Image 1 (cartoon, rainbow, N blue to C red):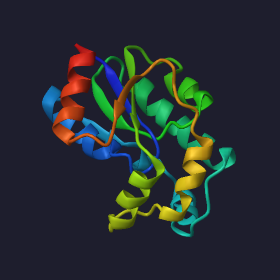
Image 2: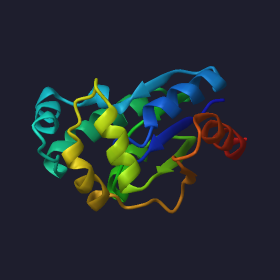
Image 3: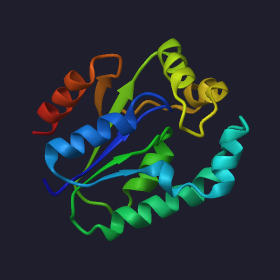
Length: 160
């Protein structure tokens, strides 16, 4: 494959689920950007406090460094990448990068987050995610309300 695919969108849209399945389909590694958050960010989100740019920039910097160190290896990364400036920073010095934007409605995301038990993200932060979101113009766009197999199939077809 020799490409990096970043599955992006608001929390609860299915980035990790889609990313894992896509990585399995392409037989390449998967990484969740949440694993790069410092403890202070996780604690803020657990407390229902939205992250701001001051919180996000060190996280984005560590992700960009990780992507640059891949040096041509393939990867599927789940990452919110809500603003264009975040996406631009993530892409600096990274070749063969493709964006996949999972889109969903606020009610669908709220429903998903309220049923999620093992994640640190407080569902009360949904609105702040949508307020921060700057939809990309250079991404494969997918309706995340579709069944998982259809979402993954669509992405695979677009990436071919």
